[in-house]
Amino acid sequence: MKAQPKASHYINGSFVDDELGRALPVIYPATGETIATIHSATENVVELAIEAAREAQPAWARLKPVERGRILRRAADILRARNDELARLETLDTGKAIQETLVADPASAADALEFFGGAVGSYNGDYIDLGGSFAYTRREPLGVCVGIGAWNYPIQGAGWKSAPALAMGNAMVFKPSENTPLSALALAEIYTEAGLPDGLFNVVQGYGDVGHALASHPVVAKVSLTGSVPTGRKVLGLAGSLMKHATMELGGKSPLIIFDDADLENAIGGAMLANFYSTGQVCSNGTRVFVQDGLHDRFLDRLTERTKAIRIGDPLDPDTQMGPLINKAQHEKVLSYIEIGKQEGATLHHGGAVPALQGFEGGFYVEPTIFANVTDTMRIAREEIFGPVMAVFRFDSEDEVVARANDTEFGLSAGVFTRDLPRAHRVIADLQAGSCWINNYNLAPVEIPFGGYKQSGIGRENSLAALAHYSQIKSVYVETGDVASPY
Image 1 (cartoon, rainbow, N blue to C red):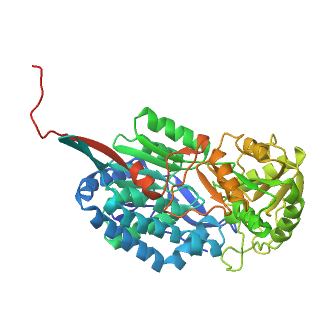
Image 2: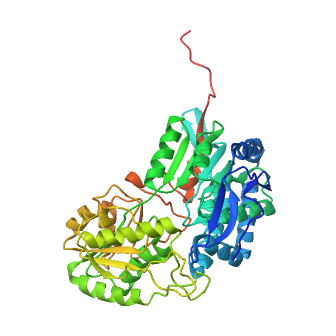
Image 3: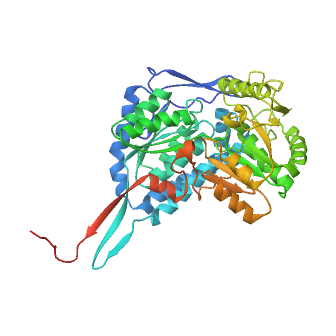
């Protein structure tokens, strides 16, 4: 199984390599084998990428927004035409089941390019009547932006960050996660094929030191990170110390609240999507599942039946529903949390083991896991695990569950299942979370903002809100009469 790219980096419209950079092996999570080897960016590569972006950005910003949008929409069409091959590449890179990547990864990136390519033409400033005189505002690009992606949705993240940045007239240097470096290179090639001028979307690979070099570079105006809360604190602190714009889309420990009157099958489907999709490696996952007393036992029984039916195996098999975790370190982390849950007194209701899969003995698999009788103070109830580990809690009243749901440093997402829609809206209004669902979970259409409260981040991905985060406002006062001066 090989997936060796043409080179490690993509700069100024061409593949670039520098073998002086630290070797970066690409591991296929299903088998543990190395499927490619690239090199981390050297200081010279970082400078080449930043300079290419700086040189290309002013002319790009002077184009009419609809002209920029036309190129993005063309790139979206190419992404869709190549969906199957890109989905396979994403599965090799991440280990996610191909039945997921075929519908959720390149397609999501294409949606972002299409949306922002169309939306930017009508994204304008304001006219302000000042009673004779007037003023207006302009939405102007920031300049060179840096995007730092996560490993769970590599091409989606590259699309979500680059599309609004480019639509607004910025240039971007994108650093994928060192765990999943491949698909951003494919997106860069597609941008070039679609007619994006050279230098506007550059991809540089590397570890944390490369991210630091990019985020701290004096030419860079804005940093957008998707990652963990500890990483976000470091990057935001660095950006703030240099007065750079920053958006942070970080982790969570989100609540999913299921009331007695919820549709049982829909609620279970939502809980499974909120915990087992992408092998549980989704920042917005509703890993604290609060079930009201009257439904709790039936919910747990039926949840177990449906979870037992999940097919784990070869991620490239279209019938596989769950693939492996991303790497050995994450595998060990998730297994350690399962042990912690047992030691703290939670009931391991289902799963928790490493499945025996012939031909995939070196893969990073873990069974979908359900803990029952979880209490709010347990570590598995408070710390982000980022694996297929669901914690189920009982609750009695609405006020009680809202208070418990909000008792966390995180605030990325939340969900409510109930047939009582006034209650649904009331509870969602009281939950301290930025991305919420009623009677569904984990859908993230590009048309709506995505991001969190509290430690889960600052700013928003997607929607017109993202264009705001990749632009700055210039106010212009226009005098139509004489200047009133006391001098």
